[in-house]
Amino acid sequence: MTTARLVSTSPGALYYSPAYPASKSLGRASGRVAFPARPYGALLHLSSPVMASAGAGGNGSPNAQGGFTGPSRIGEVKRVTKETNVHVKINLDGTGVAECSTGIPFLDHMLDQLASHGLFDVYVKATGDTHIDDHHSNEDIALAIGTALLQSLGDRKGINRFGHFTAPLDEAAVEVILDLSGRPHLSCGLDIPTQRVGTYDTQSS
Image (tube, rainbow, N blue to C red; front, top):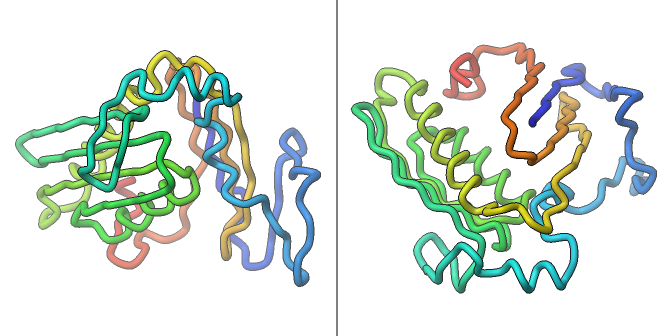
């Protein structure tokens, strides 16, 4: 289950739901709110060293392509359609390395952020009919990433499963709540005020 909500797009404004207050561990540094470093990856990490030791390599294999080394929890998907050709690999026990080439610069940037803050490795190579629009590439890349993530999670034993986080990012405040239960549900409240971010069509996402 995933819930995503754009709380505010006003410059300098930050609001959050009382049901999900900001963490008490947040502090202040140089007059700005200081968030714990890279909190997103904790959701996928194994909850104890014993479980981590038992789970490593259970459903992966050594592979150097895309910057991955050694046995790990790895998912890999190749998806070919009339419009796209997509290859995705995810290593949950990586270090935040991203190698992404989708033909859509803003999507590459967001995938880089996903890997960096999630502390897992992401390899995405995709070609598609972006000369028409970004829709098919966005859709098939998302399908491939979701399937690779499902593969890499395996039986989910030992993961923390639940997590939520609220963060101010420039002129926006974003709240995300995740439950990796395996029961699909999405509640999305992203009211994006612009039709494009650079050349990226926000309506296609």
